[in-house]
Image (cartoon, rainbow, N blue to C red; front, side, top):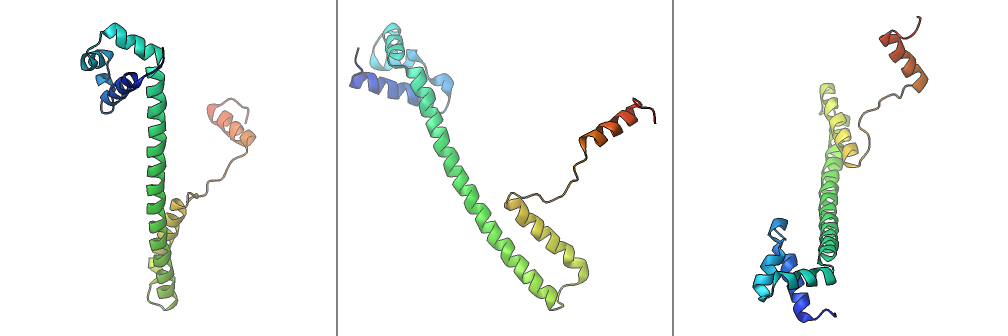
Length: 147
């Protein structure tokens, strides 16, 4: 059987039924809308791979939404980075001119950490222990070694 315009319209109706709530997407509703038996609609669904088409379409939509959201997040990060950069420049200028007390230098650290965080960089440094040393320490704590 070749897919005709009625089959395509029925699929589109079926797809749209589940946009807000996938449980609303039923063959029975399609059958009622097109005045066909459930068996006929089930045959169309199987013949024209409705379930697979729905899954593929939802995946494509999800990817487009994710890409749009990624662009929005990037724009927000870029704007915030510009603000932080300008703040950092002004802070350093005020520091050089003696307008900032030494106690306020911690504010510069916060600005720099925010900038690094937005850039996806580490804001803290954690030393990595040698695995063997770490295991020996664990064994010592658990009393598994003769120390």
